[in-house]
Length: 177
Image (tube, rainbow, N blue to C red; front, side):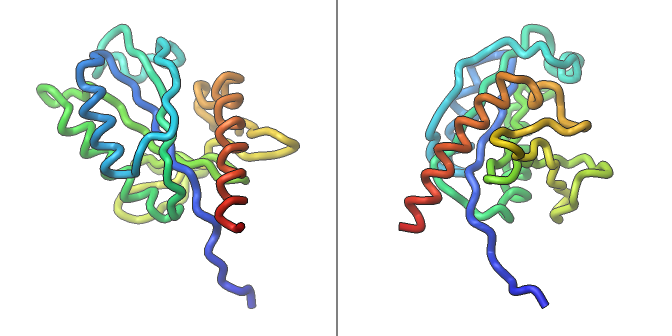
């Protein structure tokens, strides 16, 4: 029989896709309340990897990522995803999202996103939320999988997440000391 072990905590991040930057201070404040203080914010770039959000959110979408300070239990992903959905709902106008907030976490072995859509590679966590295995760490880098969203599988995203992984690794070492 295997011995039950609690895995190490993980570092949460969120992807923010938006059209109107006027709501971002509200979104960030709510996320900080939900997850904790922001450790790092990437630059805002044009979101052109997909047209998925355009019918609902309009043209000229932009995106950036937030990395949060605290290391938290992986099991919090479902509640964080539900909280992110709540933030989207409070920012919605006439039933249309004004912002898309996708939380996920960095672990040494993989990057996982929270989603409400099931699929073969997504594991049900409860509360209507699934864990999407997005990237796996292998041979010194995160690697895309056949189902990885193109934006997360881009060289730029993998470079960013590899950098965050290294800092996360250092935080884990400090916790053990």
